Image (spheres, rainbow, N blue to C red):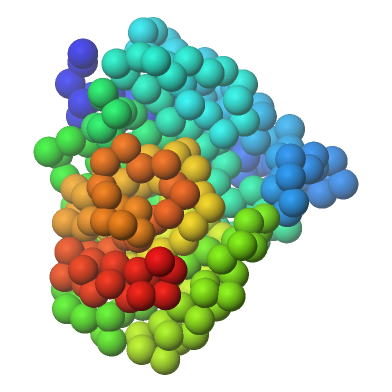
Length: 264
C-alpha cells in the first residue's frame, strides 16, 4: 500500500473536488427535488452525484478497496481496505442553505480507521489525519482543547430524526448538560462536530442513531488529535455509529459516565 500520508493527500483532492461541486449547487438547488429516504431523512441528486464522483476517484486510487457509502451507489465491504463515505454530511442543512455541511471520507484497514478527511465546505476547512501522522486543519497541526472538566466544556450533540424511542432520556441528558457545562450546540453534521473536538472548538459530543459513514473519517482525526471516541458502553473498536461519545481525553471518562447514567 502506498504511504498513508500520500493517500491522505489524494483524498483531500477528491474531497475538495466533491465539495466544489456541492458548493456550486447551493444557490441553484430546488428543495422540492429532494427525495425522502425515511422520516426526516433526505437525499438529492447532489448527494448521489457527489458520491459517484468520489467513488470513481477512490476506485482509481485503491482499486482493490471496498466501499461502504451512504447513498449505496456501490457496495463491497468484505475487503482488507474499506472506504467509508458520506458525500454530504448535513444534507438537511445543505437543502436549506444553512452551514455546516461536509464531505467525509474515511479509510479502514482490517476494520480500523487509518486515514480520514472531513472537508467542511462552507468554511473551506479541510480536516485530515492518517495513522501515526497527527491531525491537521488546512495544513496546520491541531490538538484537542486543554479543558479538564465538563464544567469547562462546550458540548455538541445531534437530535434524533427518526428513532424517538429514547427521546425522554435524551432530553433529560440534554438538560443536564445545559446546567453543567458551558453550553450545548447542535450543528447538524456529526462529522463536523467531531472534527471540531479535534481542533479544540468543542470538548465533547454525544449522539445515537448515526451510521458508520457519519463518523469514520472524523474518528481517526479525533484520535490523532488526542481525543477518544466510543459507543455508550466505552467500546472503541469498529464503531457502527448507533451510539457515539467523543471527547478530549481529559473529559472523556466524565462524559461517558454522565451519558451512561441517563441512557443505559
